[in-house]
Amino acid sequence: MQPNPDNSFHEFLQQIANAVSTVLQFDVTVVDHQLVRVAGTGRYADLVGVKLPASSSFAEVVNKGRPYIVTDRDRDPICEGCSRKEGCSETCHMCYPLNRGDAPLGVIALVGFTDEQRFRMERHGEEYMDFLHQMARLVEKAAQSDAAANELAKTHEQLQGIVESVGEGIIAIDETGTIVCCNQAAIETLQLSDAEVVGKNVRLFFPSAPILQMAATGTQYKHLEALLRGPSGVIRLLSTASPLVSDGRIIGAVALVRSIEDVTKTAYQITNGQPNPAMEDILGDSPAIRQAKQMALRTAISSSFVLLRGESGTGKELFARAIHYHSPRSSGPFVAVNCAAVPEELLESELFGYEDGAFTGARRGGKPGKFELADDGTLFLDEVGDCSLRLQAKLLRALDSGEIQRVGGTHTMKSNVRIVSATNKDLEKMVADGEFREDLYFRLNVIPVWIPPLRERRDDILPLFSYFLHKYSAAMNCVAPQLSQKTGEILQHYQWPGNVRELQNTAQYVLHTCMDEIVRPEHLPVRFKQAASSAASGRAIIPDVRPELAPIDDWERKLIEEGLRRLGDTPKAKDVLAEQLGMSRATIYRKVKKYGLSDR
Image (cartoon, rainbow, N blue to C red; front, side, top):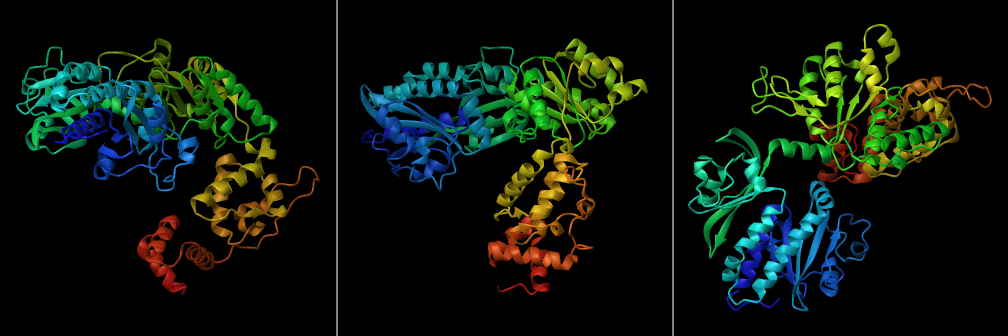
């Protein structure tokens, strides 16, 4: 990619990179056919002129002339061979070739550093690839002209067509505030009934729009939550904007706008609780858990409501997420609400949302409820047996009619959700006692799935315990200890009233009490003294434990001593150890001094 004498083509490439970065919310970089970076945004802005390694995916794109996308660098074959893999912080990138005729010009790429960006690239890969294709055509056209600025002006209509293809709201103004570009998504987000807004001043619609300040000062902003008063009333939106610069002079600004409701829904799709696992990712191979997984997998493909039954701590939410993962709604959101964790007076607004001013303390602009956030996806009602009879009636109406109404609202909204509910209560007895509506019970209990307690799947206990030991020891940067035979017997014959959750907590406890390579009975919590009898021999297993655990000072000293041995005695190491042990920085220094562990 040969620069023009006045370097105007590289300035044009930088403008393209800035525009694409603002629109798609990724860092953007451009390299020439020799893999030298010629433009970049964000982290790459200061790396222009640096050459990329020949082992990178950029080289693959230049050599083969085909796009390349990476969304899982740990499994990608090119990333495996990259010489800079160890220091790489990218979570994803998408490379598109730039050509002039049959000759390669270079590569333009979107690069992400967060899980949210990786999620968007996985979900909207085709849309982003088409966008890069259109931008590549613009670059290739400009490369054929000695005046890149003139070429950019000629392609204005093409750029307008490109921004229309993007689902995000995009609006651009010149230095006077006149709208020069506004796609349909922005018109809908800004609730502008007049589609012919280009050529009009943005002040006519929004006198205090933040983009005006941007065009005046050039101070960009990211993820700004704004309240705009416009023709349709007050609008709550999230906006990111950058200035448009030519020859060092600000000639306008471009902004990306999204409604808060849309942002909130996307956040739930990405971050609500935990990633949705496949059914095979649920650990355990005992006959009881295999039967539960097979039943859950069969229910996933239907649209019928599912009721997960089982004791507390058996992993009902994990099953709910797996059902969503395997369902036709897997591309939609999974939204969970614990009906027992939310106060009764707030649960209605949590489920159905509320309008502005619905009650004292209501957030301005209102708030969408879980039914709205789960639209086209799955709504998981955990501990549904704890809903009050009044709320049960409203829940039943929503399930029967498929319509919801916000608290304080006057209009209904369609709700397209699949309900997966769960309870550890005896709903049949509650129905008989008048504590749970019979009609709601039959509405929810279309397909019941029983999740077995841990004591009914004893073959899974030791593999699960080993898994949790390795998981938490890795987080603590230490080697997982092994179980002694006696400890394994105790774990297998314990009744586990708290099920998998109790097993998980016990593994964490052991890692803080066991300072050597073997987990012995004395490292287990005191309650394991009463371990269950061996089912095979009929002989009670009495753990060989001390009458009491070691004094707290001895335990604490060993814990800190082990941490200093593992991390070192530097101030930074002590700060890390304090964080791992849940202590303040001052406390860890005081304990080190108290136990005479300094200067090790």
